Image (tube, rainbow, N blue to C red):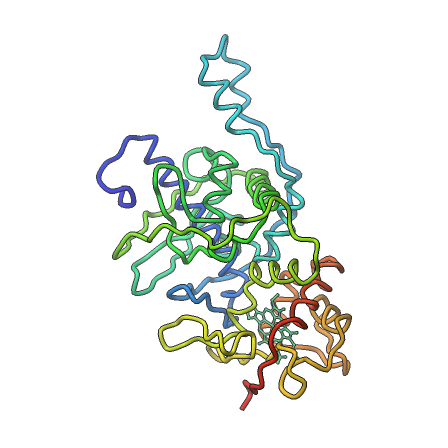
Length: 342
Ligand code: HEC
């Protein structure tokens, strides 16, 4: 299999396949929300995926994080059965994971329209080669069914799969690296709770292997409770900067204009720094929080375009404390005088 190179032991192969799925999954989450239809979202990564559609995360099946039923049937299961059951225990809360998955973009990149679930297969092309959103349903053969919760957490936050496999950063694991341990486990449990769909996704074809990724700061055990810190986390995982921060010529984000508005494809996003003239400095925290959940500005007008779509698909699910946290964070960043509409 291409990723691990050569023909690898079957176990390795399976993991690779799974890892790939996860990668795509993550990508979907990140890119999806943004990359949806006309949405101009771009991950600074490399190329932006042209995702087809990004339906939100589904209705969250309330998970049956059970290991396979087969274990019991087998008379005196060999030691491996027990080991497997242990490794396959999922401790996260699938409903909480669904909430996070929706905020990140609901794994929309992985949504397979024909099969009606996160069965993957959507193709992402760029100078780096070709990757396909992986099947992130818990199918044993073609999905993530063979991955443990720790494997999934690792894929989600660092792109590292079992056996030294590394996801290509179309999958937004860099953004997801700020997820707390608890939230990452919740997302793993959510994925594990989905209905399994059998769909074999083609192998990726890359011009070079992705570099391993180590986050600058180790993730916390639990999400921060301080509103500004929580808001920073949410803005990171929701990748607001993909639309609101312009890129440099090399595709990296222009941090001098962080969240100061940008034109991506045909859509221009607003300056959401606290600049009084060109940004949202005159808005209260409550007004910003209300816009995040409803799309209504303080003057009563409605946001349109890509932002309206993002609110409909994901931000309307924000809890009030989380919407207020995003607002508190936006109030805390440096004001930048920049009118993206000029
Ligand atoms: C897919 C692209 C996209 C993403 C992702 C996105 N936005 Fe937006 N946002 C826009 C666009 C485009 C507008 C302008 C809409 C309009 O002109 O009606 C906008 C407008 C806004 C506004 C209103 C500003 C004003 O002056 O009217 C706020 C506040 C805002 N976004 C915050 C956020 C935050 C916070 C996030 C992340 C949690 C985010 N956006 C993610 C595209 C996006």
